[in-house]
Image (cartoon, rainbow, N blue to C red; front, side):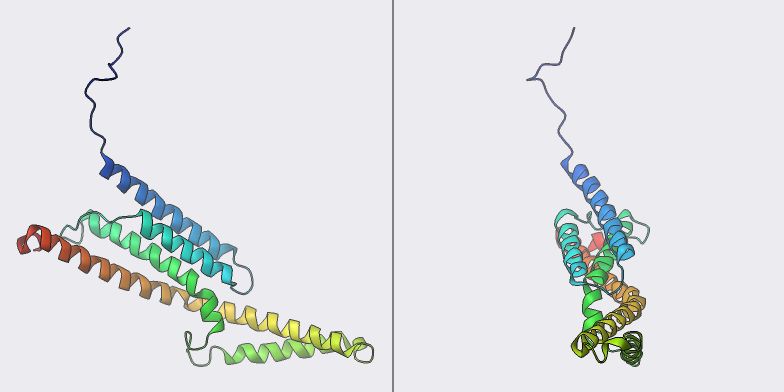
Length: 199
């Protein structure tokens, strides 16, 4: 039975292709993980979403490398750049979600937060009406229940409101990342191959 010699010539491994394939699979997996995180979010956005978003950003930036720049909108580089930029934008949106919910300066859209405060006061009054028997028995417990109901209502309202604007923040991040990566790759190709290569 003929067996190849362990010292015989071997075909060199195509490491570049392997890295590209693994990187593409990684971007797909990260995109699915980000979508799953958003789909499973219940109620208000919590800081764990920021942790997940930062982790996914670190993974995609560490293990995915764009191919060499090639001219033309139909080139494979453009398709992979779009996928990369959109994935990063999705991760950025998940990272920013709790911040948008809690920081007015980061989410300054006029009139988007006022209704949530009114809803919190309404839930506080509902809690007082439902727990009226505690008024004479345990006022501190009633106050805590009112505060808890109000906070939950405000958090859920802000979460619902900010979630509607998350695609805008994600798209903005994707545009910035895509433009930056395109400019960097084009400048690098021009430096390596000369100005004629980028025309």
